[in-house]
Image 1 (cartoon, helix red, strand yellow):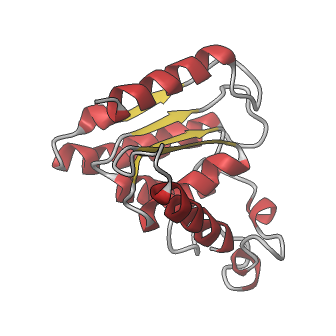
Image 2 (tube, one colour):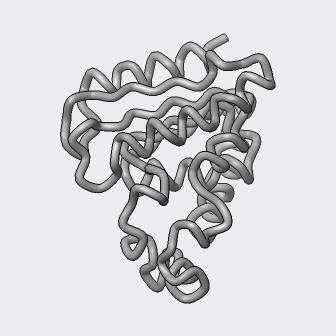
Length: 168
């Protein structure tokens, strides 16, 4: 939550700059930045478009202790015993909270950190919420054949997604 708070303060600052259109702010991040984008956006609707590269997977398909550092999410260990089934949320709920805002995920198929099948599960689960909003096309994913990386072609698709939703 400290990172989300800091990110929100950064949006506060950006919103005051004359060269920034406060109605057209997006967020993009890779790995830690990718899930920080996801952890920040539900708390700040000023983020109009969200992009996450190699930033998440379903907890059910992840290594739970990797989330439990003392400055990260230690309660996953202390409160939920590193058991994904005991954690009261998963990334499908986080992504669903973004609807109907545009969300783009780039999930590398050979990522050793975030299992791509878990990303597919999250995107499929969140799709129903986007459909309820009539904005299914705002939820998009790309699955590049790569390790834990944000390859140039995937970055280009992400930039195009941002542009399509932020340009006037």
